[in-house]
Amino acid sequence: MKTPDLTIIIMKQNKSIIYASLLLALFVSACKVGKNYERPAVQLPGQFAGAPSADTSSIADLQWKQFFTDTTLQGLIDKGIKYNYDLQIAIKRIDIAQQQLKQAKLQWLPQLNLQVTGQYNRPSDNSLNGLSTSSFLGSNHVENYNANLNLSWEIDTWGKIRRQKEAALAQYLQTFEGTRAVQTQLVADIAQGYYNLLMLDRQLNIAKQNLAFSDSTLKLTQLLKNAGEVNQLAVQQADAQRQTTALLIPQLEQSIAIQENALQELTGQLPGSIPRNPAQLQEFNDTRSGLPAKLLSRRPDVKSAEMGLAAANARVGVAQSNMYPSLTITAAGGLESFKADNWFTVPGSVFGLAAGTVLQPIFRNRTLKTQFEVAKIQREQAVLQFRQSVLNAVGEVSNALVQTEKLQQQKQIANTQVTTLRAAIRNAQLLFKSDMANYLEVITAQTNALQAELNLASVERQQQGANIELYRALGGGWR
Image 1 (cartoon, rainbow, N blue to C red):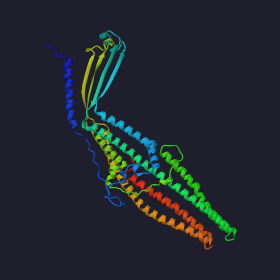
Image 2 (cartoon, rainbow, N blue to C red; image 1 turned 45 degrees about the vertical axis):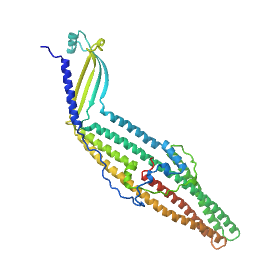
Image 3 (cartoon, one colour; image 1 turned 180 degrees about the horizontal axis):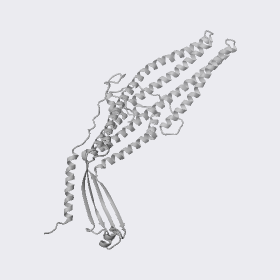
């Protein structure tokens, strides 16, 4: 009777192992542990507090070039998007997350490694290995040469690899939305800085005009003093009032230079002046806020928080699957010989092996259980962070709407006050020349008018800032 070839028997056994492993893998991979992501319930009002109407459209739907029509400001924002370092760092984080996502997608594929080894072993002549080598091989040393390909493939049991891919994708989207959030804040910061610069320019012009007016008042007071109509105290009071106005000029010039440097830094440039045309001052009249529910899809920081929650949810599935058996199929094949001269002799030097391994963690010092429990707590934490981001977004929009409305009322009052005090200055001068009012009344009228004009410029600046903040809070600026 002919004895079966040992090689044929081994090959049949290996095939049986592989087939059994594949059948088990198909059965187990149908079981996907962990919950699929669902957006948690959040509390949203039907309408923003302070919104004039429940309009479905919103200013956040406008691109930033449509919302900001000032060409100088558009140039600054465009330069900031290109060269701002914080935004560039955020973009690099997207690149990192993209590479991690590519890696996660390839976890489905088996790992294949090439290994080439050469071994020389010279045992002791008096050792058992030495005596055996001399007896069987007729040599005092053993050589072994091996060149093989090793394949290892972890079957996606319990959907672990799919959950890892979900987590990587969610992390990528989280980073992407985070970068958009950086851009929306950058656009708003540049716009705020630019309009603050225009306000300072306006206040500087107001101070210079009032200084010229104070000069004329001082000259008039000196003439009246020479004519014996007033005393030296009146001249000193007029001069002190002029000095107070003059002091504002270097203070405002300092603030202008600092604001210019801050804007240059936001746009990634070295400190320096910024050419501008104050005549291009933009009026913001559009305050359409849209529906609060749209914040969930429009605000980048809210979407980033939600993607963080989706990633945390996927990591719970990964941690849970780590506690279950894992199935790995391994195979190797190549050329092996104990002599270099017949290393590549085929088929004599050919070898191969295959195996399927099922690994069930039994005792790991509660490590896997702890990882699973921590992952669930982190998911709960991510839910709270998402809800907090929604709450912050609604609050910011509501605050900006209230500021927009109330600052409009303040502007009307401040305009009326400026008109009244300018008329009071003219009346005080006429009465002073007619000796029907004293110098203190003239100085008081000038001081009040100066403060009112500076305050009007500040209120208009705050109104512009509130509209810019409303645009950012609604999610505008990343398009």
